[in-house]
Image 1: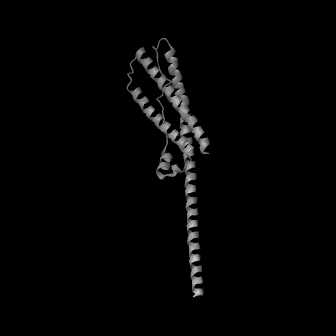
Image 2: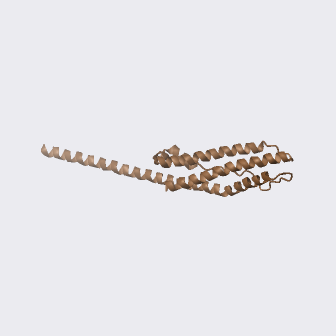
Length: 186
């Protein structure tokens, strides 16, 4: 009887250890997969933010030129020969946000430390505000009357000067936020 009890006890202990090891290996494997997903998220978010930074860097000089040229024309006493050859459209941006949205939907975003998630949220909030402002800017420009007189020329130059000033401010702030966030993430 003693032999049977000790055999049974050994079998129970063996099975328990086996189950425990199975769970441990499964958890280790799952943690490894989650870590890989999280590292991939960080890498992809970094790429998306960098891509959006590149977009801004490609247009900010143009927006500064439109702003400064508009100001120059506004400083003139007469605007009879106003020909805004410097203006080639508003050239505002649409930003990528698919990685950010995927991170939120999958719940991986919640694994970020609070200061990182706040910095990233700040970028995407400012990008959204920029896009909304861009739509307002375009709507305002479309509704302007383009008559061939000095009053109309001044209105257009004023509108471009003010709106491009705001666009440049928003782009500069976004670039600063993006650079700081990339440093924080990496």
